Image (tube, rainbow over all chains, first blue to last red; front, side):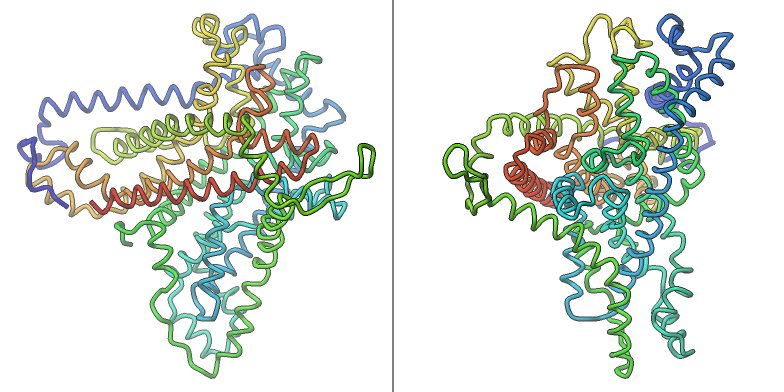
Length: 302
Length: 313
């Protein structure tokens, strides 16, 4: 680190409070202006979605779309009722599908990735490097590149357009294995495994009773990663599914949006549906942010 | 936690962690345990990652042949026939050029903003850090499809709340639609990349700044000479994932097709794969996929290498 030739020589500031120099006040305001402007950029579209969800189709076009109107509350209620009942309640079905794909496949996938990552970190065996490097290569293979061959394979087995066509590929998270290995190495001391061994605990039991507990914050992070990638997955369901009762909510809203020109009423449902579909994610994200930060830190640094 | 190693270097280093001595009597038992722990993931990985890759390669090496004009078509080994077609396909190269232009502009802007926000959040200049962190990260909770639908309406000349712009310039026009897509991707991912870099900044021990500050270094100077070099590994990681994402672009353009006719069915490489598979010309589509996957690999490694050299300096 070479800080030996500072071009800008300033008087050292002892603390944050004590009489900040004038420049600093200027740069502080500049910083706040930048942050403020980008807050608008990031939040305004979501705000627009929220406000637009409270408009009827007629008012969607004719009223200012960044603020509410007197009938907003009532219209919002109507819109939500319409959304949940349209086409025999296909929207709640999509939400349920997304939740099942993301939580069940994400949950099982996390455990499988943790087992594999733990074994790669804690045991010496032949072929370990090969396995790890292959999995690492898998991180670089994008999911979209696999969608087409997966479709061909599933169609040979007559499994396209089934729940399994989306569920089974979603179980695999190479990135989860990569993270698990890092976490296992840093949070499960070898001494504890050894102690469990001396106590007569089997290797597998040690994993499920001791290691999983020590790795649990990390497992939440891996789960979140996988949950989001499954929830956001669009290409795989697009390729695999025809039956709309199997759709995840992303694909469902996409098909609705493609019908807007024939059925104008559906635009309101697309808007309200988009809002409803991101609420669970927003809540999960913001409340679990701690885990994101930890996980991202480990992924980026180790 | 060492901050000076790169992910790739770290991966290699992680591959041989501190030796864990095992008592020899447990060897056999361990072998069984390893198998039980690895196989469930391993089998699924083989079935849904390795096998599809092999399958795509095999498919791409076949051609459809007919006996005469009306003969029953059958598959035959065709060597690199499909790959010749790939490299002769002008639409394929046009789509590659498009995503490369996208990547060259969008990725530096996105990562530059992410770095700027991370540095600002890490500096004493900004108040209300928690709020900004949440606000900037919030778009990442919006799936690509939903984000594209939302922005599709925001760009619309007649429905947008920003009609003073959108009624003047058609943002979904052939010339601008690529950048309209770039904006959606930037909107979703800046906060995510910001958090990756920010958590790397938080891991830097504060003593490092103390010395610099006593030397009279400004915040700017500290950011440039200490913070950025130290978070380079995190930036490299975000760059690699961004490059992969750029080449794979499909969700946002696919949605925008519903809003504008300027997105053709061969707009991005993946759209071309999808269109070709729908013809159906599965063998050619498989060859496209293979070339695309190889290109992704090469580019990711190139990014790793380039940035690695920068860090070494």
